[in-house]
Length: 327
Image 1 (cartoon, helix red, strand yellow):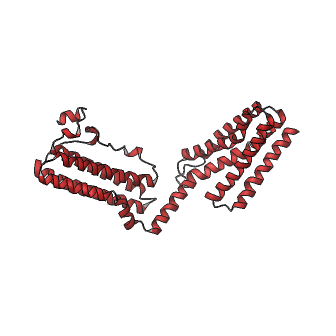
Image 2: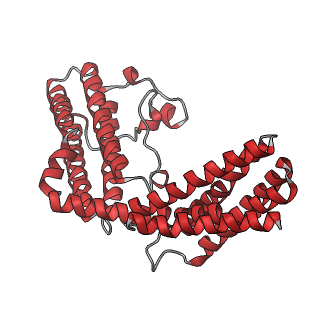
Image 3: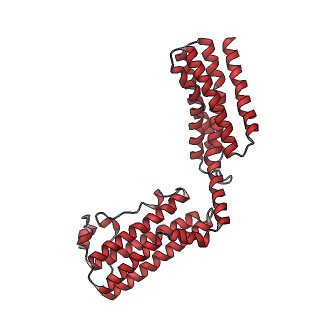
């Protein structure tokens, strides 16, 4: 059987013997314990309280593994065959850990619940395939344990994550989000929205051609996006400032810069000049107020100060573009 498994022929679960089922359960518990340990190590520096949750989950999986090994040795001896999830058809495989890095904390907690759900289903199915009374009792106990362990994260949260810890972790997540995405994205949106106002509206009133104005806006937006993206990515590597990945920040800044400029360039795809211009002016008005809101929402800037900085400043650039275009 083992040669067939390792040779690439995946077995159906209902073809496994009792010894193979126990061997599969042992390897599955080992895998889950390693995943929980990796999660704990990954979270320990930034979210120490959540790391304790996964330390507890790891300990539970190791306890299950020990119980399964003892049962296997009692029934079948010391030579445990290598049977893993990927050897069995229909068995839920775990993603490599490197594909699970940088996941949001709540996503990781959700995955822990899903792992326990899958483990419970496995033990319930395994229970149907065994006849030995002692093995059935162990599998039944483990199935019952997994049912309770689906709520283990909540139970451990009560133990390790009091209101103060949860509040602190929420603050840490908010800070990281702001540093990595909001700040560079907002800077890009402001640059794209404001810096492109003058060239777009200058081109519009100088040429009265909607297509030429759109091309100027498109070039200005993309050029500004590329420039802002590379500038942000090269500003620092995030290791000392804690601002996160320079690639993520660069993309956030570059994409939002381009979007900021395209917002009032796209209306010039409308053939009628004044319809396009009025639409673009409305878009500019909305853009500037959205930026002011974001500054107030995520950067804790007093709303009216944000309005003064963004709306008033943007209006001056907008007016400059119209004056230059009419010169």
